[in-house]
Length: 137
Length: 112
Length: 214
Image 1 (cartoon, each protein chain N blue to C red):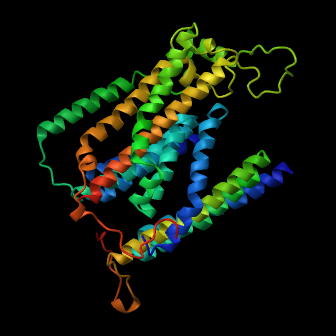
Image 2 (cartoon, chains in turn yellow, brown, orange; image 1 turned 45 degrees about the horizontal axis):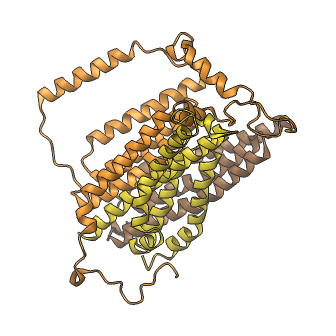
Image 3 (cartoon, chains in turn red, blue, purple; image 1 turned 180 degrees about the vertical axis):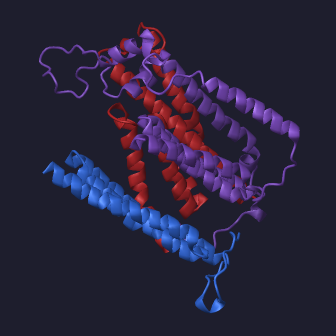
């Protein structure tokens, strides 16, 4: 991609805003359309754009494959952890009222963060796997 | 004042929609790839800009208008870049443009 | 015919024609592009039905992610579908299934029907009322200062409330499904990843090919 000056410059300008938009959608899911699933996909799309334009090696050194592979499990673990925490604090599984005052709000925030981590990690992992497959062809 | 804003809005949206339709017709009727991309470029820039500016006139709140402006800016940066990427890819893979001294244009299918 | 019905008909006609084109085309690259367009039209359709959350997800996943992954797959396989033989049994099976599906949809309530189960079931009222009931605050908290004021769960977006709080188990199941999908891809393509690359076959960066610092 050395000769694609326009693509590289435009991508360099846009990727921070794409990632910022992903975080905006994640935490604005309380007030408008949004939430974990959409934010995870947008975040992964930003990383995939980086990988497509600057090369797989650059993307893998920015977001390491080992990190995203553990992220796949970490998000689900966070989700279930919130459920178990509410069990340990006296309520049922995933009963946010047991998480204390304003428990619903905190519970929903944590749960959506878990979904975001899993979805983004899975999308980036699938992209890395396909790209490695193509590279080794 | 609201009526003036709404009329201004419609005065922008309807020509914008017409430009989009013209771009679509050009996409179908032009003889080869590069002229079709040229026609599609109208949809990207002029059509989208007019529709979004018309919506900005009709928006209820200034925050909505600012968001539409950001969308317009994003569209202006990415659509021409995508067109550039397409044409560059076609050119470097050997697809030559149809020039004036090549004879009458023939409707060709999609070459790989 | 009102304007909304016109948009209805146009959107559905576009969806149907895109689906037919996807089925009939043999060039897989064009089919990949049309799949992206189908997802985008589906997102417009969902937005038209007043469901912005779902439309958002459909546009992001279908028109963005899915197209790239299909194109990545096409890099590895043939770009042209092999011609399939026509089989009368297949035609009968497809017609039967499609006919039974259409017969089933004749029984479904129309959009916004007042007698529909989604509207008359008491659980709908319970969900909407609990999402919007007033929240108790301690004294000293000025009323209306918090955007969540007036909502028992505390957040204004009902869809997120239902998704993450009232139906938390279902969302946990969905996340587990996505996790399993990622796991499946890793297991299938692990041979390509974790095999130690042969140093003699490693692709070197060409001298002068800078990384992202350029």
